[in-house]
Length: 183
Image (cartoon, rainbow, N blue to C red):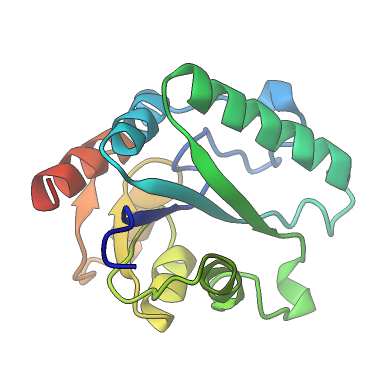
């Protein structure tokens, strides 16, 4: 496994695409953040294997039907591919906060499912998110959280000024940091 390309875990809403308090319910509402597709392409071309782990409580709330969520993810993958990148897999939690399911971040279930499916040791795997729950989930499995200030990131940083993790303006800046750290 030592010679396999490194993995990178990304949250979706607020990291790759614009977030919405009304949820991303259709492919038309899925709009990439500036530089995010280019960041994924750059990382892919440098050997990173990109995996998306995302809470999607809009499914539990009846706002997004599972087939529509798959169409949204198909659009995301297609736009990433058109930019020259690749997303290896998307893992999502369809449950709401009141469901207390083990896969909903900040719980580690999505991370563990990914690790099991890809036979990955999560220790030190970079995990980019925009919320405290992304950070907590990554830390709980030994991954290396990174905060971006897009989406909920600025608010997360303001509410938790003592965060001792790398913080970047956006995914493109985080990608540049990762490539400098692991050329």
